[in-house]
Length: 433
Ligand SMILES: Cc1ncc(COP(=O)(O)O)c(C=O)c1O
Figure (cartoon, rainbow, N blue to C red):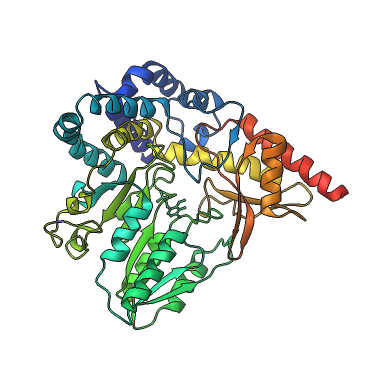
């Protein structure tokens, strides 16, 4: 019954993506519908390993065939439909900027909010569209009324822009910013929840948590942390830069209070796009980061007075949502998890190679850390690029030291075979000295 419902939901979402005037419709309708028909009502877990299906998706991207890009955790490319939408809106804007941007393209913001809200499973009145996760999360960090002595708990494994924002608040307002530290990978929800709970004091007002730790891909049990925090009367801010568009969830399901994300990572939206979600009854009390004539309005749009920004980039997000819906979030999550385990489960058998991330779907999806004994992350990163033209990224941050590898839906198995071969050769060379 559930399987059937999921399938019907998938078909319903596809219909939305292929609405009459969508670029998706013009570029992909026939071949995607054929691919969809061929896989029938197979479960997403089974489709994850269907190379014929995914080759249709791979062809929708325009990535450089001579470079294996495995740093999609940094920023992801957009498929052709999204690139074409941006360039079409850009040309239009330049015909008469103030007319086309403010009178024509501006009309697209509410339909876009509706699309993003459908994908996030929430009300349109809880979604603000902005430029990136830093802007979304800094809006909440600087917008909360906190007084000297109030405590905020984060982790040493959070993203630097958020750590620095909290430190700045500590400097300006005298709040106390405490950071706990985890030794990832951890395959135990209770251990993570307890780690946060142990740091709580009567002065704690906020927990700041990262849904997927960018350095090493650990997924945190957000809902359980939020439930625990709420029992203590504490609000939770979630940094979802890497989870939105990758994991199949709705934001209200997380039970958090605030959620910020970039859309140019796993959603493959135009570079420079982001989103802020605030639980409806909390909107009123958050000050906008950029001025607004009604700073205590309960209208989420008060966070969008950004001044002149790129309308083509903003409107291009719509095609990225179409693209996501046509694949289906669950299917995408299963595929990317399959790709990560495809290489990581083989790499961990190579003598001298270590994997720094869980292979279990509850604790990781796309991002995975790898190291070779006797090599620094910088050395391994350079060897991968220098000798094999595999682009990943060396990470040295707090207690984490590895190379971060992140595939995306366009990644081919041949690219990952090349990565495993490269690791075999590099590790063998190192062993021989
Ligand atoms: C966990 C996390 N949060 C926030 C950000 C910031 O994203 P953006 O540069 O889009 O603001 C990143 C970027 O990599 C990240 O990894």
